[in-house]
Length: 324
Image (tube, rainbow, N blue to C red; front, side, top):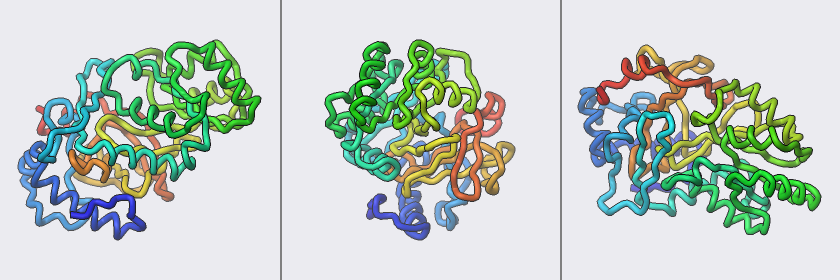
């Protein structure tokens, strides 16, 4: 089977590769096979992408979601700060992950060596197994700038570095977890309009949740920028979507988002209707590419999606048969 996901040019290319990946994983990924059998679905009856069953994301916590005959090269794990347990992603081919995140960064921002890349990701650095840290560390190394690097809790050093980069007119990307970015701008204000500030997600139990609009307003004021960028990814994925402002995300060609009806998890909703997010990530060729998440969102007519919140515990219990 040809897995050249980076040569996808159009919907027909995506469809052909997607159906090949589905048939392969339906036979070789045991948790996915179990899920399909539980749903009483015949693989041969699946003719459209919208008919493909999506694996509940909880299965990455309790099952080894893997379909390769060789031992994994690395195991990525999620944080467990919410008390819901850790997810584990068994990765057979690190080179594929590296190519996926590098190609996506190139697509949305250009080559990493065009930038100084700064990472403010303390909660991720303080544990092992973070796929985000692996990605940002690789981008830092590719940037090949002396100023690039991680800043754990050293906000003073980060402030000095940002000021130096601004004075030297060096294009800069600051990738940070939300609560740490907020902590920084509570202590420092930087007027750096050319800076790209990219937040990577929620508060992780560190601070009170606030709306995206409120968060971005605070960060825009603190960094002196017009927009806040965002990265959408997770332990269970090997690809990322990016937003360059207003919380509207776009995917690379090998990744697609669908919205499912929260009352009927096997029904795909129409554009502009809110529901739960399903993800196809063809970089997940050795685990499962078809994942039903707990994120709520919607897709607009331009294929941009936004995240509106999370499913409640009762919604999750009602939708996922295999994890009962």
